Length: 440
Ligand SMILES: [Zn+2]
Ligand SMILES: [Zn+2]
Ligand SMILES: [Zn+2]
Image (tube, rainbow, N blue to C red; front, side, top):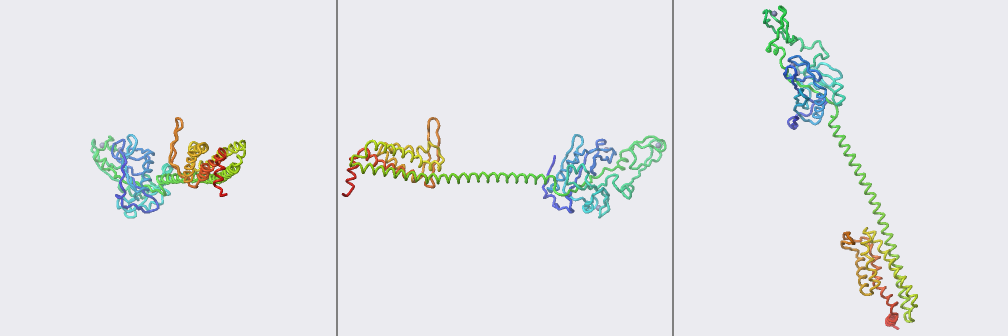
C-alpha cells in the first residue's frame, strides 16, 4: 500500500531548527456517520467534526505512522498509502517538512522547538493558532527520537482556554423556525442534532443543510512530529554496519592466524628439509668412501687372489646394506620437498636400485639416467595405479636441489658398483686391467 517517491520531487530537504521535522496528513472515516475523519491531533480519541462521535485511533496505528515518519525524515523520502486494521483505515501522506502555518505558510519550527509542555502557538506571520506538545510517553517508549508534536489545529482543551480566539469568535448562530409551533429557534454549533423547542418542547431533528453549516467538513490539516538525533532506521543501519565490520575484522584475524600457522609450518618444513639434505650429503659421502675403499682393497689384493672369499662375501653384503641405507637417506629430502607418499618415492629412487645392483651394464645405464634426472630435479605428472586404487601426482620441480644427494648416489651406483663387482667376481680381470693401467 506504500508508495515511495524520489526525493528529486522535494527540492527543499534542509529543514530549519535542531529537530528533524516530518509532516503527516492523515484521514480516516467516522465509524458512526461515515464522513471523512481528519486526524489533526495525535490522540487516541478524536471527535468526529460532523457527528461529534468520539472515534478511537489505536496506539498501534499511531506508532506505525510515527515510526515511518521517523525513518522517512532521516532518509529524505516521501510516502503515501493506506494502513489500518479492519474498519479503521488511515490514508496517509508523509513528508520530511518543518511545521508551517496552514494559512500563510510561515515556518513554525522556531516557535515549536521548546516543547517541554503543551501550549498554544501563534503563527509569527498571521497569528493563526496551533498547538505544540511533547511526544507522549507511549510514543517515546517505542520511538525514542520523537520529541515534539505540532498540530496546525490546536487540540481541544489545550492549555490556554482563555483568549483562544477559535472557540468564541467563530461561534455561529443559526435561526430556524420550529416545524411544529413556528417559534424561533436559535441553534449554535454546540447544539446537539436532536434539539428541543423552547416553546412547544418538541424534539426537532436538525436538517442536514443546517447541521453541515454548523459543522463544516474540516480541512485535512497536517500534524507534525519533530525528531531529535538519529532515527531508529539509521541506528539499525549503523548497528548492522558495525556488526559487518566486526565480522570482517574477525575473519581477517582468523585468516592472519591461519597464515601465521601455515608460515610456521612452512618454515619448519624448510628447516627439516635443510637438515635432511645435509644429512643425505654426509651419508652419500660415507657411502662413496666405503665404495672406493672396498674397490681399493679388492683391486689391490686382486693379483694375490683377493682378500679371501669369506671376507669378500661379507664386504659385498655390507656394501649392499649400505646401498639400501644410503638410498633411504637420499630419498628423504625428496619426500619432504614433494610431500608425495611412499608409492611415488618408490619410483623416484628405490625402484632403480635392484637393477643397478643386479645388472651391471643395463642397470648401470638406468641408474646413470636416474642420476641425471634427479640432478635436474624435474618430475613429470604421473598416475600410479596399485590394485583398484589409482592416484595422480602433478609435475613437480625440486627448487632447492633436494634430488642432488640422490643423484650423486645413483652416479656412484652406476660407476663404482660395477668396478667393485668386477674386483669381487673376476679378480684376474681386475689385476690385468690394473697392470695395463699402471705405467710400470
Ligand atoms: Zn461522524
Ligand atoms: Zn500564518
Ligand atoms: Zn416549537
